[in-house]
Image (tube, rainbow, N blue to C red):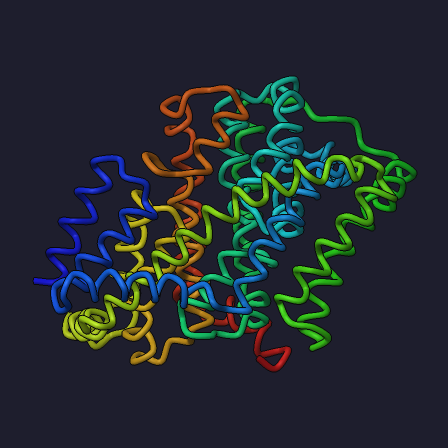
Length: 429
């Protein structure tokens, strides 16, 4: 009864175009109100929202958002593109591969898929069109490759999963994201090469060794942030939260004093944009934490776990079922609330099958990344189409092969745990 009521209330609110954070909060209130008087239910929701934000780990989110905003405006994207161009420019599909590699690098550095799609997509739009790619193909490449920023660390989504899963090691999750993220990039590059050969897309002349060295040296300060942040976490020099503060300081240092693309007078605008993004994310987190508590209070995660276990005693059958459910959920729900709501529902069942929380976290995030590219709620779809100046319906058909490639990587990650767990185990996590 509780699950049915929750679904009716939540879906009805979404259909009425209630903002998703409010829809989640109201659903939590209704679910708690089944067993508690209205005043106590209101008080409980408020307490759980406040308690949900009372986490040192969450401090990393606003700091990584600020770092991403600084990087977005500080000339880092342009230098990464120049470096990628010196490597891939003369290959078939090279210009699209530059877009993909640029998104992988910038997304990994900034931790934001939307910032990556906006920054790299804006820079690559004209070069892709001038080379002969259609607007639709260029948008599809940019949209799908920007998801790698949520898998390759540092990733705010993996930090949120750590919170929702009850404290899974952030360092282990960060390490686990590398191989799946790189696999996604390689699959997208393969499609770009096939498209370029079929459509006889022209290529650039091969960059000279001097150009390669110059672009590499110019991009070294940008790469260094990955070494500092991830190396510091893995080496035990600082926590993920502390690394986010270091990322802000380093991004500010190279953007203001080295690249000189921004000045201190730009900081109020950067901080305001960061505050808006952070406010949206943390409101989602607080409402989702209230709903997670309400679900647990009504014993729903345990009941769902038992229901999944009753379907089959084969963990791979259950994993396929969960993947299908998450793919469906990702079509209608953004990644942050989906991670917060469904982690406590699905993870208990996975743990009973012996699936590592780190492995399941990568499966979940990778799965929901596909939803970010799909209508009607895909936020990256909106960003990518806005940057490319095309309508959403015109790019959906072009996206289908990319979806299939991403699903193939998802299945490989699902059934080959070593793709996620090899690096964490190598470093002792």
